[in-house]
Every structure is written in C-alpha cells, then in structure tokens.
Amino acid sequence: MGTATLCSLSRKAVGLPAILTDAVADVVAAAQKLRADDRLIISPEAVLCELEAIFEAITTLHAVAVRRLSEARNLDATSEVCGRSTKGWLVEDMRLAAPEAGRLMRLAVQLPLHPVTRAAYESAQINAAHAAAILTALAGLPPHLRDTVEPQLVERAEFYPPEEISGFVDELLETLGIDKTSDIRRERRNAQRRVDIGRTLHGHRSVVGNLTPEVGEQVEQALALARTAGGLEDTRTVAQRNHDALGVIAADYLARHQTPSFDGAPRTVIVTIDLGTLENQLRERWLTLPSGATITAETARRPACDAELIPVVLGSNGEVLDIGQADHEFTTPIRRAAYLRDHGRCGFPECRNCVSELHHIVFRRHGGPTSLDNAVWLCAYHHWLAHEGRWTLVRQANGDYLWTSQHGRQRIRHLSTA
Image (tube, rainbow, N blue to C red; front, top):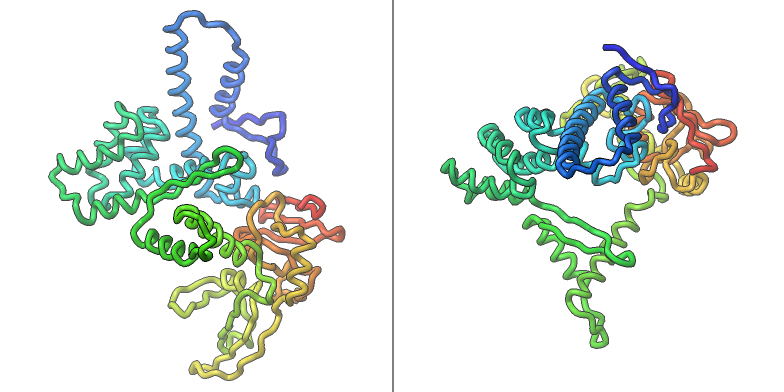
C-alpha cells in the first residue's frame, strides 16, 4: 500500500513526520474539500440526503478509528512513540475528554470479541452508541448465551435507538424460554452498576447511580458512621448529613492517597536469592512470588525501586545463610525535597497522573546512589515505562529529564514547566 507524507508536522510533538496511507490521505483531503464547500443548498430533500450521507460517513470513520485504535493498543504504539498508555494518549495528546476516551477504549478492546456487532458497526448498519449498548447487554449475560443473543440485538439496533437495547434483552430471553430470574438477572444487574457525577450551576454536582448490594451496604455503613449528628444544635436533615459525611469520607481518602508517602519507603521488599545465583551475579531470570506466580527480574525491580530492601541468602537446600539489614530506601527529607523540586508532578513530559513512586534514575544495580540528584517522582505508568517499557531516563545538568525510547525517540520534561 502506498503512503503519502504530509508537509506539516502533527500537533503532537513527538518528533516524527506525519506519514499516512493513501486511503487516509484521501479522506483528509476530502474532509478539507467538504469544509471549504460553502455552497447554499435550498432543497430540503437535498439537505436531508446529504446529512444522512454525512452521518453514515461519520459512523464509518468512527469505526475505522476504533479498529486503528485496537491495532495501536496491540502494537503498544503510544507507549513506544509517545511514552503514554493508549487512553493517556487520547486524553493528553488528542485532547479528548476522559469519558469519551474511555468509551473509545472499551470499543477497541471489546469489539474484536464480538464479530457480529463489529461487522455491523464497521458497515455503518449501527452506530457507536448502538455498539456500546450491545456490548453492555452482552456483558450482563452468561457466556454461553452471548452468541445466540448477539445477532438478535444487532438486528434490533438497526431499527431502534440505543437506549432500547437493554430492555429488549428481557423480551428476547422470554421468547427463547430462558429463565431470567436467577443468575442471569444477577449478572445483568451487576453489569448495570454505575455512579455518574455531573456538573450543575456554580460548581455544584448531581450524583445518580446504581450500586451493587455489597457496595451499597458499604456506602450506607460508611455514611452512617460519618454523619453522626453534632448534638442538639445540629439541625441538618439526614440527607444534608449524608452529603457532609460523603465529603468527610472523600477528604480522608484523599489525605491518604492523593499525595505520595513522605514517611520513608512505602513498602518493604524481602529478596530471597540462592547462594549460587548470588555468586554468579543476578542477570535476567524468572523469579517466583510467594503465590507461585513467576515474574521477570525487571518486574521485580520496579516495586523494589522505591522500597526498603532486606536481602536473604539461601543455601542449596533452601536454608537461610544470611539476613541482611534494610538499606537503600529514600529518606523522608529526600522524598519531600524531590516532591517540591518537581512541583509534585510526574517526571515524564506533560503527564497529568498523580505521582506514586520515587524512582532511582540510575538504577541501584548499576550503582545509582539513593540521593536527591538521583531521585525523580513518577506516576505508576511511567515508573513501569522506566523499568519494563524500555525507555531510559537521564537527568541533565540543568535539571531537565531526558527520556529516550528503545527506538531512539526522545522527550524532554523541563523542570520549569512542571
């Protein structure tokens, strides 16, 4: 397939020219041509005919975008090129609202599992909202029923709006003679769990949702504990005290989790290693967790990067030969100083995630010191990128952070623009 290179650089500053296939370049050119077409259409029939064609084209393009998004996710493209997760790229580089990015990612992940729905969506028989409604309805059914029900839902979606898909499932189950009073009903109700928070006037929020029994009970108990009346002078209604109690619960959680831990290492890692491996130096090998699961050495090093390490040396029969003392953790002053220096932001450029890990820029195993100059706060994703995503990080003389991917692409986070 041929390619066409656009002259202008993409808005997304990743240091790469915009390279498009001929088909996509043609679509871009056609969209620009349509945008420049300012002819006045007088005929009502012609206006509606063009609108129908445009909406069908939008659905087709949306489906293609979802398919490409699925391919990008499978290739880990955004991580390699931009150093972001796929959803993070949609939000931070494409400037999509987080809910819209979440809806796109859901379609990209789940549609390949439902080929009938995917085919109808990509042929513009149904739109994205229909596809999402069908995925929600199928998620509430046992797996053995989904292949039977899916074609019926797609057929229904061709003639009815998305909001009617869920109600049609009950009718369909009754028609098929399937008992929907036990596990099926439970699964469907569980799939309908949600909490939506919307902005109203002057910064107020409206909250609506549907809680599962266990979550509902937990919320009720928490509110009951936090809404205790303050004596005879407390004239608030129960609903008002519930509101204030929710604020107390949220403030308590944020106080514990919104900012990183400054009280020394957030975890302790006990490293057990046999004497032979210790003498031959630890290289790339698979390690075993207490649960029996196996992980790579790189995966093990990530949580250990910001941890208190206690080495335990084992003999050939598993006996303990030596237990070392905790070492290499960042002190409380270093953790606070690094947080203030980096303005409480992740060391990756333009990242908006909350920081969670204090990272050794030069790894411990490479002789990196546990010092302020060798420390940088990272969010969970970019800490993974530094250890397992094959990106390298260097702190430059002026304090900027230079990131380099395995393919040599570079991104710089300027400290002054944190």
